Length: 201
View (cartoon, rainbow, N blue to C red):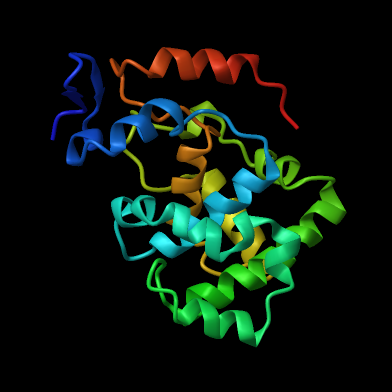
């Protein structure tokens, strides 16, 4: 597969965007742009864990449903979920009804609060694992990296669930901890500039 695909507007983007028109705004406005907002970071970690074994297209289509079901991914709200909430979520056809993943999100909310208590913010913790450019290959040629493996290992040690190295790397790609837009993609340069301006937490 070539690294680029021409969109309906004539602009060249990462080839995965051609799977569905729904991917274009996600690709242009979200994927790879650096994020330092704790709520957004926690949401993406949760959605990446739900994606495990599924396609991102499926998750993206249900994202608003997930937000409604999980208190807009406010970590303190989700950490307080109990068996009644789990039962409610297992009946919610708008999300992925996987008990293990639902319970993992609730567990991970509590772990996120512990990280905030220790590090000051989830963003400070996440960005401490920002990949060194030297460990990265050609854009979109890798499914994990040394930094993603290190972050996954540390998260698991802290008790997080569904945070394997591939999941963590996908999170890093989407949250702008690296710029994995293909060379020649119409968004790549703007993301580079955004990362250069970013004040790391």
